[in-house]
Image 1 (cartoon, rainbow, N blue to C red):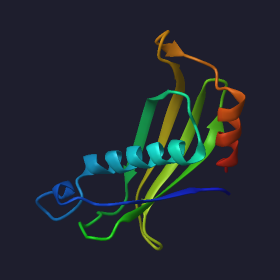
Image 2: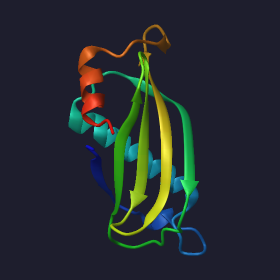
Image 3: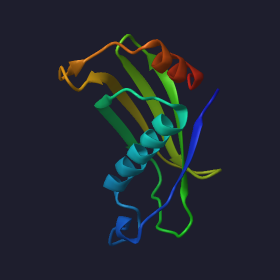
Length: 127
């Protein structure tokens, strides 16, 4: 299975009063990773998040080293696709997320069909 790997830096301001990375920052890490996936893999079309589900499994303590975020595609439809993402180290998974995204026509302000190049890129990341 092809997985996109992204090393996401942690910021001092990501930390909550208990020294853990705040739960909302997990969503930012996932977003930064999706942006990296699309940039690195040549996805040029516009898309929007339609649904996001996240499970927080283990507290991520603030540290100076980046955390690894893995992303792969679990479903490709005609205009939407589903990404699965994990924020993790080698032996610890801090959170898992499922993100449904919809290809979006900015001019018409509505969903659009995925084109062939987008579909190929997504299939390269499919489980």
